[in-house]
Image (tube, rainbow, N blue to C red; front, top):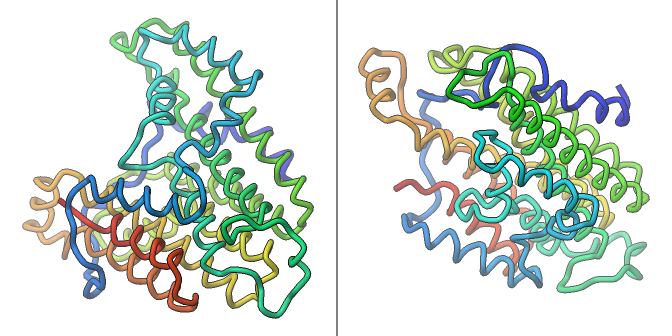
Length: 355
């Protein structure tokens, strides 16, 4: 399936049809195997996360919290936004997604673009390939890498919008009129497609075949991951090592692939060798999976305790979160010490903390 075909079928894969569901969900992780000690330090204040992001934004040269705002405020999407206003008063999840794009300080929807910029600066220009020396560079980051960070955010935002599509076959009377949900679904598909189209246009302008291939494969991974999430019972993830392995595989596809391959693509744009590209890939992969495991570590501890007492679990999702955090830190050891590398380390520490 080529990229054009993928984009045409994406809304269907992400929820317009398929197995019955009301909203998208991620696999539940109630128990995992112990994976070793944690290298990070502890700080439990939510304000610390905001501080980490704020300091990282200063390092890359500008606030990235609204990186995709330029596209979101375009005339085309502004017209769609006027239609979204008609959903006010309904329970369609597109409204929640829209609010999250403006304010979501803890999950930081723009984190992916920030990480791409930081790892670009941490790696710097290639020491063996001078073909990029004439490229524009601001705050140690090439303009093409900044474009890539924005493209990454556009893809992520588009997928968030698409994944908010409601399964009309599972509606209840308490959800409100059917026509409201149908209208909301149409707007979600239209706006998500618009963002993806802009992302694809931006990729073409980068004029790098390998980067296009990397981001296209990340899109296919996302579709595959969400498809498996929707077709697999949550209970199949939480009882044994096979379930844990399944969780890791699907979490990489649906949450880690985009960041991992975007980080690798940033290294490709700077003409770094395969080893540096792989380390960037590993950091993006494990950072994203650690962030996702953290969400699982904040779930229902009463249910977790019940499963542990029943002999179905060994530890908690915290161990898995810290395992991937350690792997992300290991990948950074290949980069020279710098303020950008320190910021990437601080992000790992921040997403592996639990209150």
